[in-house]
Image 1 (cartoon, rainbow, N blue to C red):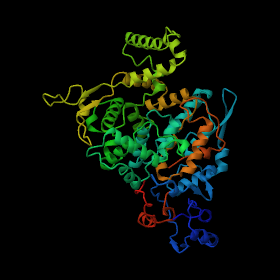
Image 2 (image 1 turned 120 degrees about the vertical axis):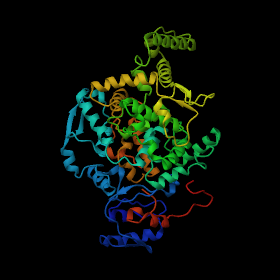
Image 3 (image 1 turned 180 degrees about the vertical axis):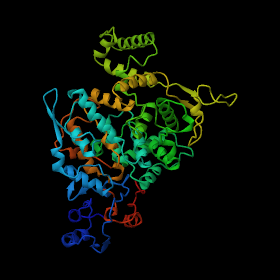
Image 4 (image 1 turned 180 degrees about the horizontal axis):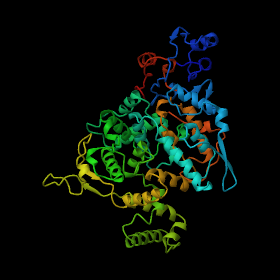
Amino acid sequence: MAIVDEAAKTLGLIISGGKKATKAAKKAASPLKGVKPGAELDLGGMKIPPPRQGPLAVDSTLGLPEDMQMPVFFNGKDVADFEPEDWGNFGRQYGVENLGPLSTEQWRKNLKTVKTASGREVTIPGGDEPFTYYDLLHLKSQGINPNDLPPELHRSVHNRMVSAMGRGLLSDERITNQLLFGLISPNQPLTPNELALQRAMVKGPQDLKAWNEMVPYDYSGTAPDIKDRQAMSRDISSRLGLHAAERGGLGASGSANYTDLAEMTQKMRDRPDFYRFDPADNTMSGMSDSEKWATFVTRVMNETRGLKAKTGSLGTVWQDPENAAISAIDRHMATLFRNDMFPDAQTQADWEQNLIGKYNMERPDAKVSTIDELQAAPGGRGMFVDAALAYVNNLPSAKTRVKKTGEFNERIPEAIRETNWISGEPTDMEMIQGPYVRALEANQARASQDGQGLFSSQWMLWDRIRNRLEPHEVLFPGLEKLPRMNMDQMRRVRQEHSDAGYMAAEGGVKPIQNPSRAAYFSLPFGLGLLGMTPEEQNATKPGPRKGKKPGA
């Protein structure tokens, strides 16, 4: 049952009137003015217990039809209209203590004004502690080009962003969401990837169960063929609201197969330990940090359909973003470290000449003779980046065991042989070796100069290449505890990001008027926010609509 907004304003809770608020609830709204704190409410004959103290429970809304989703409000305000202190109070309702400040006035007093190289004035939250979620929104909303900041200031701001992302309890839900982020990422710019994660985010056991049941099979059995899984994937992405914008979705599904996400959550259900990085794992004894992370990601990507070295790295580094000694090698990094990914100068020269020859063959009227000329020529930059990315991500693969003897292939590292797989030992494996490792080593050398971890350093370099600060705020610790904004709110958020230029993969962006308009996190359906237990919440939910499967 939906509760009208007047009740939300009176109670100071995160409740909003849905499109189908009942007549009884509407009629009962006006007498709420005199309700005493802690008193039971009677809305049209429905008894609602008083709010309980402490963090509130969030119910599952994953994949619900749009007319069963409700917007998130707090003290009668839409998320887009939150003041800084609203974020602080909102977070405390859900046990997220560092979502925002306690006082808007004090927060504004602490802002430090900085004049950029281009003459702009921007403001940075004062102090040296990790940023809050609202701080990240504030930074992002200003459209700051990090290349415009003094290098030391950018490094300080960046390090505080990274520290913010590594705080809090590393729950199974949080790790699941990090892996979902990696699985959604192929061929997708960062912001659409983040919007997609908001819709897919796991908030608790009910959401994990909902993901497990998004497909009509279990990973322990036989999966349907790719054609059937692609059809299922399209259905899942539409249920999440990620279909094309012109059809009312967010246009953020990317090229991922969403059945891979469901299979991964099933494995998280059975073996969450497998997906948790453990530097004390005795099978990795004696390894360097880089070797441990490479081994961990090798295990994860060979167990999880849809993950490769790049996406597997992106989905795992958030467990320890300050210290993770591995990272995704994407089109930005493949370009930046192009001179480092080859084993020797001759191999690089041969690769470049082959690419130049291919370009000239395809465009006979525009001959180029050097790799720099190629990158400056029409279409040459894209060809170069695609070829560099293909080269660095072309990982060696091998049969796991020798067919004749049944012994392990000597190319399989010892630590990988000792893996306790979830779904059984793979017959073939890819390994993080060759150009990928050389690019990582070049990145590590740069990171060490700046006193940073490998992933942290790469993130900072990404932002300089993209010409904007990208806080990755959708992965902020604790967002998995918050209610999920509904599709109307998310369409507005998407438009805000599109108007500012964030939907593009890189390039300068324009400011967003109010930082809160850039916020997106994943109102629960049901009455959990009024203090009901999960059992009581389930008792109030309507059954499936006629002609619809549950969750369809």
